[in-house]
Amino acid sequence: MSAAEAVVPEDDSEMVDGAEGAPAAAANDVVAANDEPHSFEKLLADVPFQVTVELGRVRLSLREIGQHLTPGAVIPLSKVTGESLDIRINDRLVARGEAVAIGERYGVRMVEILDGVDR
Image 1 (cartoon, rainbow, N blue to C red):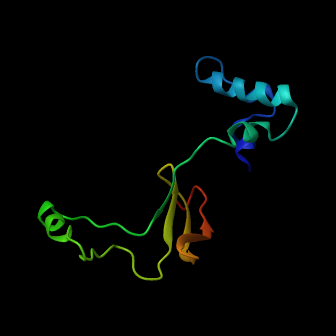
Image 2 (cartoon, one colour):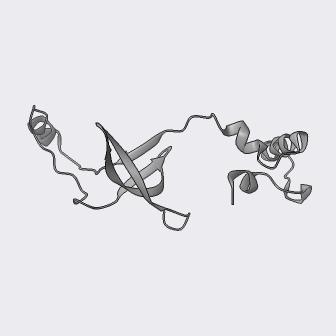
Image 3 (spheres, rainbow, N blue to C red):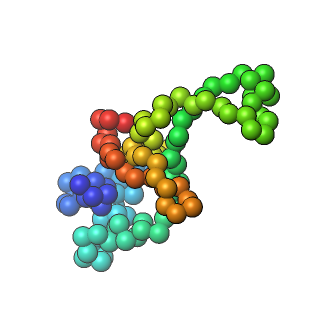
């Protein structure tokens, strides 16, 4: 199901009166005015999202941070080599992937897209 289908009801039966219903009504107006099924998606196409790929985590005491914050120090992380990386959009876990090299840059290959149950 696309974002437009999830947010925009096809008929007025799902509309809610009051302040909470205002966004749903506005979404209906966008679709009805443009008569295009993906107009809501087009409206949001250039909205920026923060994408984060998490290599691992570690919890350190202030003393440990002081010891590790030196050039050449290595801080071990929670994930083991070969374990999938967490991919988050606006801090929400949405997928898992693996690190890849693209020339001189790092990238991430999507391995698994998570549904609401897996998050």
